[in-house]
Amino acid sequence: MRTARLFVLVAFTWAVLFIRPALALDALPSWNDGAAKQAIIAFVARVTAQDGPEFVKPEDRIAVFDNDGTLWTEWPAYSQLFFALDRVKALAPKHPEWRKEQPFKAALENDFKTLAAGGEKTALRLVTATHAGNTPQEFQATVAQWLATAIHPYFKRRYDDLVYQPMLELLSYLRANGFKTYIVSGGGAEFIRTFAERVYGVPPEMVIGSTIVTKFVVKDGEPMLLREPKINFIDDKAGKPVGINEYLGRRPIAAFGNSDGDFEMLQWTTACKGARFGLIVHHDDAEREAAYDRKSSVGRLDRGLNEAQARGWMVVSMKNDWKTIFSKPGP
Image (cartoon, rainbow, N blue to C red; front, top):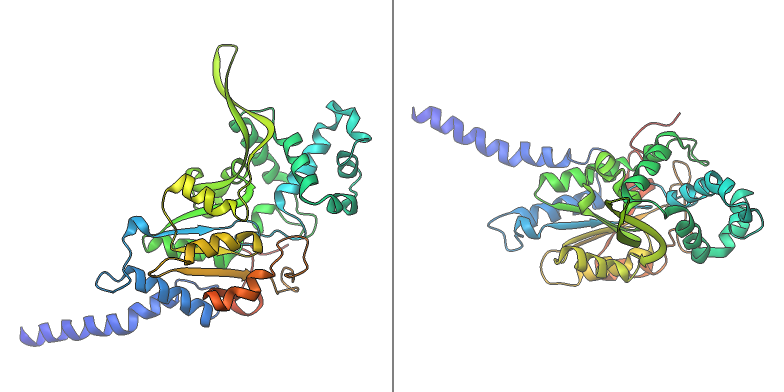
């Protein structure tokens, strides 16, 4: 009996020392073994060790993720912008004035140079004109139909096939360790809620994004919500920590982004005492996806690169830290 107990004790010790760390390393199989992967695993170990000095209660294990460029591709333009351009073409028969009115004229003629020159103002005008006049349910049905059929003009694949496999693994790994994972995006909340649960495992109530004005109305005796062509809230840059606080009432302990639009979210998340984690996805893989940062018109990453090291944020190289990019193989 004594020999049996000794054998069990030795086997348990061996499992703790060797098997459990091996399983932890395999939790992120699409990540190359290196500083980034080890930093993630070490952080999770610290905040989940009940007897450790940096233990964080499950209710406070909140991780926030940007969407465009962090969870799926944003190159060479945001997916929601491509959706808006397709909506302009679909709605054009009802708006003959668009053939002479900018930026709709440029959208109909695929004049991307004019569209790019208009910047954020042009994008917002296209969004408000094409996303309103419907209920949230009607809008999400339109988005779902588009996602099922639309092909990305650059990668020649469905948009929801252009999700980053390493980040899907990271979402799952955090949730397996008691984290609540939220999406905090400058993109439209209703747009992302259409696919977030199916693609990311993030339910719609855990999506924080930009919104347009939505009003309660009664139409033909039926109560409903109606989306209007007016911007309500832009969840980008300094708006991200504001949105997180407004929706959650808690401060995250981990934040993941890819551009200077995520800077304030990372800054606010990691400024507190205790275990905190900030990570920036650096698009530096021109062969498998795209290479852009400081001078890009989309997903610009300049200040974040300059200050990441001093602030203790991990910069992940898509080229060197990821074994694969997309969640599904290309054509």
